Image (tube, rainbow, N blue to C red; front, side, top):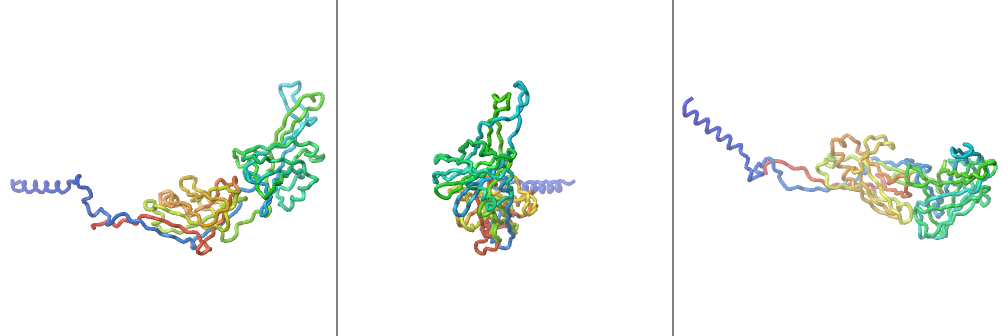
Length: 406
């Protein structure tokens, strides 16, 4: 190779190396990779009138709730119904003269109850305890069970101190002759009604829903039959049935209304049809689901509770499977008596829909109260056919970049 050709090739190689050298002290020198403008945010308000929605009641039944309701308000009345199993006829011991003792004389019976919630502004509360038919109909209504709450079946009265607070204990010692009439096979069924200076509500812990609440308890203090009648024993029973009935009775949500809470518990679903930009996990900054109440929020006086918005994994209608991650949800705290518009932050849900996991899930949001079956709270929101009051979705997102040379 001639000297001249070698010199030309060396010059070309040097030029190539110089052209590929990165200018570390002057970044951003590649105009083709720069956006044409600064970050721009955009707001969009989507009316959900063209979506689908529905409400269904029955996710937690009355007999499954963690509380028992007694009420004497003008607009709501409730009676508590409890059935205890029959008293055992024997007990066993390995430390006494014999291993089997038969129940003989009964000393006393004690009913223990635990207050869930009460309105402390209402004074002179008391629970009236009635003896119900041992095998009362568990599907009874307020109207069908009310005749058994008569003077002739009144067992006793449990006064509730004005200072008694949530979680307080109530006890009543009962004469066994009033409690277990002949022919009832030892099964004890009781009805509880509330009396007070003015209309109010009271809840008692039921022990249902696997919660840490305490169930009503019936304790028997008995002696053995002769010749061991000096030996005593205590039997303790929790309810076999614990429920309540109300007037007016529970009803399915009205058409066009998104209902949540109450008992049996209601849930609502909202199906969304959204543009891709709204579910882009890299662009959503804020997202709010705006709902308008229909009537006042229900619940215990001056109480509050949460309404949760959750996405679903599989769409099976009212039995849809909720996405279990609590961070992918939104919530709002409602207060009893509240009216007007409420806003739920659903930005985590829209971001989830933009991920590889959430991209294949249905665009379906479920509204429910928290915790279900443990609160009196309920709310109703205007549905998609409510015109200006229909649900709306307000989204703030980052506009897409337009890459290129400025």
